[in-house]
Amino acid sequence: MFTESFRVRYADLGPDAYVRPTAILEYLQEIATDHSGEVGYDLYRMRSEYMGWAILCWDVRLGRPIRWAEKLTARTWPYSFSGAIGKRRLELWSENEELLVQADSWWALIDLRTHQTRNIPPEMKEAFRTDGEAPFHLRRPRGKASEQLGEYPVREMDFDTNGHVNNIRFAEMAFSALPPAEPGKISEFMVEYKRQGMRGDRIMPARSLEEGGAYVELANPEGLVFVKLQVLQETQS
Image (cartoon, rainbow, N blue to C red; front, side, top):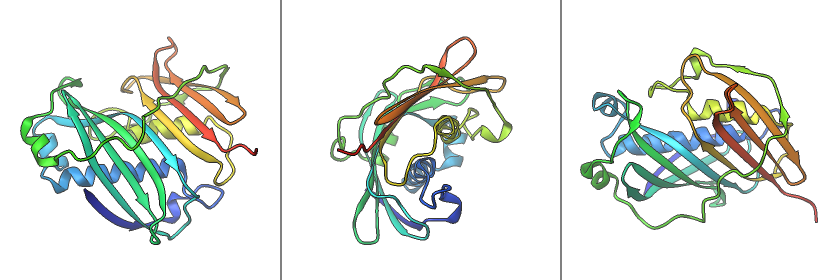
């Protein structure tokens, strides 16, 4: 298990003064990256060996809202490697040992020259060492978008070191297609990445809003989907 502690920054907050869902994804992405560096596969080694991790899907389950300046402890460990796919658990805990976020995530190792998947080398598996099992049955976004919205231009700042639109930027585009949720109402969100976003792509959001949740798709004008997002909210009984 890899563990890291940090404080919530003002920049992580949404208009409601609680941590944004996309900032939670940033925390999770950061600790996964830091863990990779800790076991010898930092950004520079990965680039020198033409390797990069691409996220396939997140299933994130939330406790109470996270406040500004809270001290959080992040914990993560991989629980499965198979072919090109690595599966990783992630958790965020409060200073008082409250489990605030629990997540499952599936990643693919890609060749940065071809942007195709490649098998995880045995020495990388040995460096990470798997432990345990999935925290829960991972769920993927399910729904059908009924309302077409505008268009998001792909900006240079959207790209990461793997040469494609970063998964957090895609998530921000998807969440921005939704109306604001009340603090503490979101209980779970699922993100699935279907296609890499590259230079020249046009991204068209569409959504459907229902009692208890919402669904968003980001697609190109031809209807090929980049990202799916489903948000589940607590409903009053």
